[in-house]
Image (cartoon, rainbow, N blue to C red; front, side, top):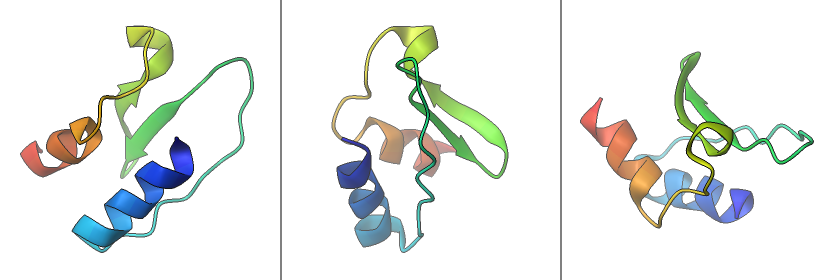
Amino acid sequence: MASGLAAELKDNLKVDAKLTPGGGGVFEITVDGDLIFSKKSLNRFPEPGEVMNIIQAS
């Protein structure tokens, strides 16, 4: 999941995503220090393209 999302961001936005190992089911995405997606808060993984849409909208 995370590596596929990192590849999607690199291919579409030309950015390198930094994957940081975590534990306890935490899957969070931050951009420039701002939390834009939290699996823990939403109790789900992002849908395909969802993170891209959030980044492009900001």
